[in-house]
Amino acid sequence: MAEEIKLPHEKGLDHTLDLLREGYLFLPNRREHLHSNYFTIRLLGKKMICLSGKEAASLFYREEYFKRQGVAPMRIQKTLFGKSAIQGLDGEEHKRRKKLFMTLLTNEYEDRLLAIIAANLENALTCFEKKKSVNLFRESRAILLQSVCKWAGVSYKESKKNQLIRDFTLMIYSFGRVGRVYREGKKARTRVEQWVQGIVEAVRFGHQKVDKDSPIAVVCSYQDTDGKLLDAHMAAVEIINLLRPIFAIATYVVFTALALKEPRMQESIRRIGSG
Image 1 (cartoon, rainbow, N blue to C red):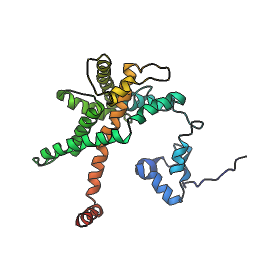
Image 2 (image 1 turned 135 degrees about the horizontal axis):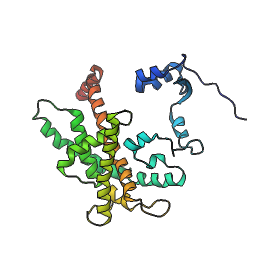
Image 3 (image 1 turned 90 degrees about the horizontal axis):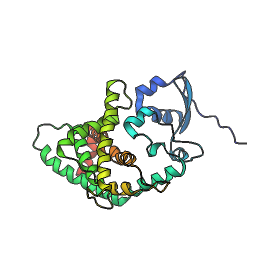
Image 4 (image 1 turned 135 degrees about the vertical axis):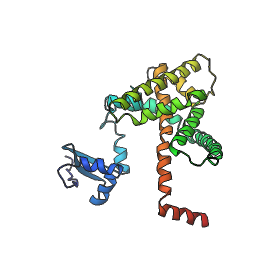
């Protein structure tokens, strides 16, 4: 019989407001306060177990304990992930689909992407130097979209760039919203899926030439557990799952810039420069 372990518990009747107020720091703050990677809290009146650390992370890969199918709310699937994508698969189907993604996350593919981003950033910096001010969030999204699309083999007309930036932004930031913004997010997802699906079909029918080892070519030729190609729409959804996370890094570019304004960070940079 397994030994029952009593976990530390955060004092208080409910911690929902604390979570909303502290955001990402909520869990690290409690880990430090309770001196434990494992503890319990109450959210919306329900007891929750919080886990942190390497061992806790590995637990989420134990398929006998967790399932993915049907877990992500439909509002997230209709904006952020795409319906029936890898995030909602289990068993052999998930393992095989994950293998597809892992083939595109090797050092070779990563180096290609970083080289493209670096080149595009260098070009952008030349333009930035001529401006009085730069909207870092807007420019970062443009650079990252341009870079990841080139890396993936997904092309777009320059006239479509601003709409794509807006659509990817809505997909990422609308899933937690309600009303008009959420509806706009769903429309944005539909537009992007239709755009990428058109490219998938063009590649498969030979109307658009791409490198055979480009991510879009790899996804287009991928066979699922039933030995069949993904249908064009599903292939588009998974290609977007390659594009979207890179585009979303623009948020952390801005976070980094803000952090660099902190006096202690500036001092660290000066020490590095003088060393």
